[in-house]
Length: 483
Image (cartoon, rainbow, N blue to C red; front, side, top):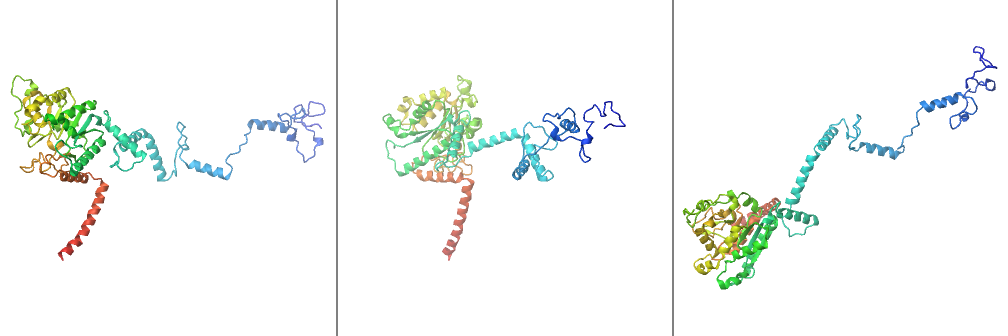
């Protein structure tokens, strides 16, 4: 069949271009002139030499078409899991911020709660380093300072670890500094030379030792409990009660890294265990001590020396005026020096003092005159030796050695000497209680007072309820008695 309007150059009609000539004689009017897809080979070519309309369309679809896409999560559970995961906050570090807000958490964007949470999250992220430092500081406080009040109850592993870290911190010389201090307690555990101990004496010793152990453990101090039954070794020399000097020298050898040594008599009681020595005394020696004995001079010692041949420090009322030169800190009571509670520092000057103080010439010649033994010997050295004064400082008695009313009470209450509950004095010393006073009664009363003053808020609350109940029960009893 030839095309009349467009004559073909080929014989028999038709065109040389493949696909434009079709055998219409073999086709019915209902069939399409396009070849079926079955005529297309797998590589895109068409059976036969011609290129049909279907072949061209198939190739065009390969170039301009879109690949087929089948979404995942087509199941019911997968779709809902995807919705849940998209509602959770997403934190992607380094991801590029998209305009649609993906990677951020905006729950209910239009609600005030959602905007507030988003603002809070961004603020926390910006301040993350500062918050980390703050949390570390709070953790350190909890670890080192929040400890249980009583260590006698069973503790779990966490509490034991916290207490151990707390003690290690306070004992470390570069941190808490507790290892620089040694408490020397004179405990007459074995009885003296001339007397036997009864039940009251044992009770006094038990309470006193327990009090010092608790305080030393709390602040990381060393505690040396001296068995004063060793008095027997000095009995043949009339040196009973001179043993303080020898004991201090032995402790200095035993604790070579310690700096300050605090002597305490057995009849002393630490009323305020929350006072560390560093804060109470040593952090500011200039204000807690005084060098000029004329500020309180019960012995009426002439001070300073008026000998012009002495050096300027010996002629000065305050020595060189430097706290670094203080090696001996002692309180004074109504009768003079009191060595029931005093401090001595490790130094070359201290070694020299202890040697002179322990010299047998002094006690052999003066032991009958010196009623207070080593205390009178130290007063004698201070009065006659200029080099003693330049390194000696005095401390107000109530800071480390308050007396009860029974001691030095001949002239009534003395605000410089006697214990004041309102002022929360640090230490009380029942000095001279064995001479006509009840040592155990005084120790018991001060122990109970200390427990009352140092109650926790919870203990105060419980005691308050108990007192109210007792008061309510007491009212009916009084009414019955009147009737």
